[in-house]
Amino acid sequence: MRNVRFGGPGGFIREVRLANTAVADEYPFALPVVRWLGGSGGLALPPGVTFLVGENGAGKSTLLEAIAVAAGFNPEGGSRNFRFATRASESSLGDHLVLRWGVTKPRTGFFLRAESYYNVASEIERLDSTPDGGPPLLTAYGGVSAHERSHGESFLDLVTHRFGPNGLYLLDEPEAALSVRGCMAVLARLAELADRGCQILVATHSPILLALPGATICEIADDGHLGRVDFDDALPVRLTRGFLSNPDRFLRHLFTED
Image (tube, rainbow, N blue to C red; front, side):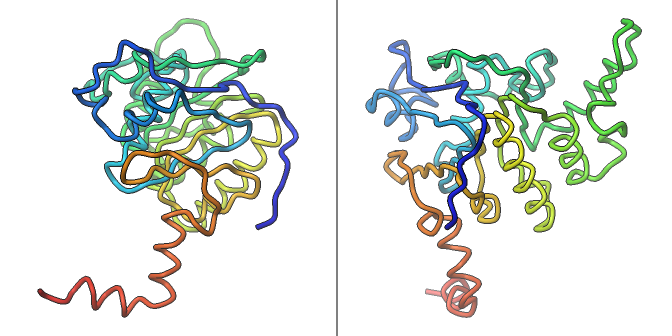
């Protein structure tokens, strides 16, 4: 696959490690990937775009959410200025992560949780209805309320209008809102943002997003080991490619009774 060297430095978070305060036998510290993080000494994060992949339950979203919390973002999503709360569902892992920051700090940032973006949209509307004299927030999100757009349209508005240069962005399974064409649009936008000095961490199952040239793909194995893989070897790519090349073989296996 063609390799593109992104122009900006973007390495705001250099390393993620588990503090000694973690309780190993309790959730989420009993997750294999969290145990791996504690035993490995830490996870290095390069500049540009890093994808986290793995099966359901591997801990991708848990780890991404914890990194976001440790970096100062609201657990339900949004920018660092968002402090609303509806129903707390985040784990305590973020309180036990230590982030090693680079010399340069991000100019802006955002944490996207696909399942709670509705709450973020509601908070934007609430803040804009409060007469504090500040500029309206909605302008930075495309000028139209996310409640008046489809989930996919509102997410494309977010990455197009709200995400800017030299930013730190953490995205949890953004493809949940997107069509195939939408994924391609986001892929192009991620490349543009990385080239403008952003650091982006994405938990995903999308083989389309993983095709981003120059990105780093980290896969969580069944035993929790988190290692870099090439695009062709990434689990979502291998399974999707195998299914599309011979769906009958997969369907026979799925539908055959023992």
